[in-house]
Length: 330
Image (cartoon, rainbow, N blue to C red):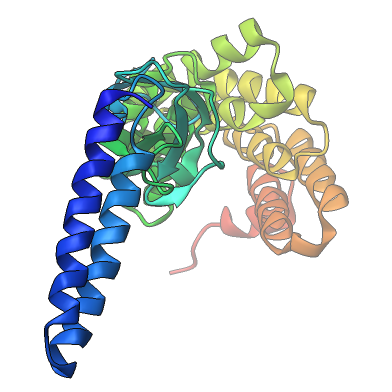
């Protein structure tokens, strides 16, 4: 037994002797107090002795030195690797436990790292905590460190927000959301398409066409044709609103090439053909829209009937027009 442990036992024996002496020469009430005194003394000495290392020195607990992520200000969808560093005075093996917003991620482990694959559900502020222990002290942890950390919206989240705002008629706010999406991912074609739709709703047709052009350019470059029919269809609408019917028809044809079963694209093409006076072709386009989507054919039928009426009005041989052209009788 080393000198420090012997000294500890000597001190314990002396204190224990005093306690028993006190216990022997006191009344019953004080004897009860003496009992508690002896118990507490024994517990204190046991804790002290258990903290002695093999060299007879007091074993000190580990301390957390740092807790660091490998990415700062990440957006949702990013995988973040956390690394904790702890020092133990006696170089005892240190165990780690990570917590996210006070919820345990995993049980105690000797691994000082944690991989966090984030998603849109993690957008906002969080608190990351790491606890450490060496097994000689507090079972629930000897030390800890916490860091406040935020996850920013990703491009998809901003674009989805833009879609929601646009659906509510809040076009300025929607356009700002699309701008945020495109700041994060300039090649996000859906955000360009959504921006074009919001600009079109505001009557900013030239800007809408530019946005749709970027969406269709990315559509071609990324070979994602099936996802961007709306960009071609939207561009056609903006061109139609500017009276550029031939260009609008070309845009609708591209949308139809990508998705031959897009009833709206067929109907929009019919509108452009009718505006050019190509009534038979317009009627054919409306018939195709009706065939594809018979359950929602009311608007298509109305447009078709309008084309039929316009065709009759444009025919000089139509008997109704001949009646209209009859001279008035005074």
